[in-house]
Image 1 (cartoon, rainbow, N blue to C red):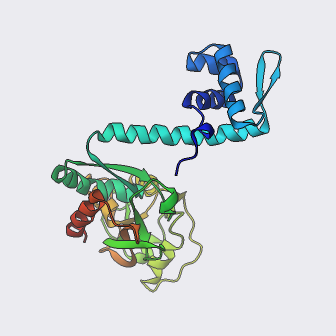
Image 2 (image 1 turned 90 degrees about the vertical axis):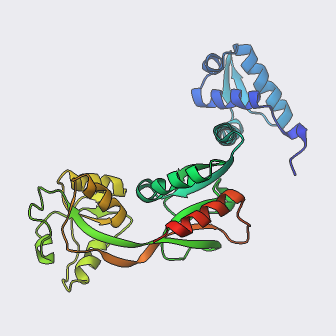
Image 3 (image 1 turned 45 degrees about the vertical axis):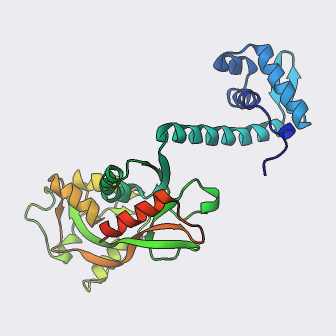
Length: 294
């Protein structure tokens, strides 16, 4: 149930409050909103009366927000941003149905997007919107219908559709590997690139080849895309998932440093809230991806 109207301020009043807080001046806020200084003052006075709390103090002609005013402005800013995003999504979708997905950047661009093109062509009534999330979140407080999860099925309260198991291979620029794959021991003599979210990945790779290594150094990255680009530029070798390596190998920017992929226990999953019947757009996507999953 929505609160009584007397507790709901106008959007114009919230815009005035947010602008004064952000710009630090009613005069600047008036200029941004194409209003007069007195109009900004009236909007804030009306808002203050409606809320029943002092939101600003006067210092001559200047308006200075109180601590309560600044807190309320921060809340209003979030509300206005959410409202703008919702309006943009509706305008972009038009009469079509929207499906909001949280994706992992590299997997989303290299594996999911090419498949979404086919899905969109087959389902023109559905508009798919993508946002980035790197870790599990609460579907109840985020504007997503489903998400891509990497790892094992340890996200609580969701349904799972396995999309693919992780396969990794060490790769580098052709200048670092002029003769292609090399023995595992020789890889230790080359600079290695590391991903923050995959600590110990290189150590595990060498361990599977009965080579004991510890505390391997090298450049550290927080995104696969940056690490892959660094590898292609010759900074070192990167341990890359199959979908990312294959995309760069086709362009001639990376070559494999090993003969084959390592298949890991971790995988990529589409997840959505358990106990909530999927809407028609999500149901269509799940059916589509079941045929695309490998």
